[in-house]
Length: 172
Ligand SMILES: CC(C)(COP(=O)(O)OP(=O)(O)OC[C@H]1O[C@@H](n2cnc3c(N)ncnc32)[C@H](O)[C@@H]1OP(=O)(O)O)[C@@H](O)C(=O)NCCC(=O)NCCS
Image (cartoon, rainbow, N blue to C red; front, side):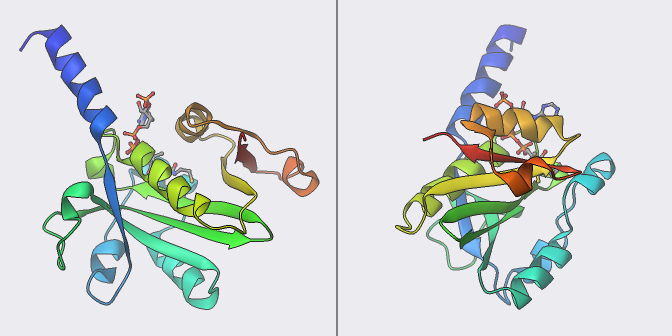
């Protein structure tokens, strides 16, 4: 395959990547605990163990496993779990608390597709007036991804002064 054909097929594949989000249950939590990011990304996101512990004590949090869309319709997913996400809806804000894609499955469009799907879900809730998320100041990949999805700096007092985190909200 020529370079041009290869590049255009990668671009095409990433554009059509879709995900299936599913609750974490006793059937899939072990696979969730095994999800790993690259060593260089470890300071950017909490482990899934920590996230699941947070969700255990905070019923506002909705932790979800990320699968390729091919898993939809199967009681037992026929494809591996590729990532993890978690959101909450509090005080009119749908906040995407976590997003991570296992290092084996990164750069295939799953991160973007997960954000699109979580945003779709959050928008279904009538309580939500703002959709927001945050990332570490040094996380340039997340910054670019969220900007390209329509997120811009969240002009709210407590967020502006945060020492390590940038808070962004989806433009209306
Ligand atoms: C951020 C993260 C979720 C992206 O997941 P992903 O599945 O690799 O993302 P996608 O394949 O959908 O790519 C999204 C964009 O990021 C870019 N990107 C992803 N990884 C990249 C890398 N290592 N270097 C440069 N760009 C990268 C892609 O090129 C793509 O941009 P494009 O759509 O303009 O081409 C993943 O890198 C991750 O889990 N990182 C560690 C945790 C983290 O930072 N979470 C987010 C903040 S809490």
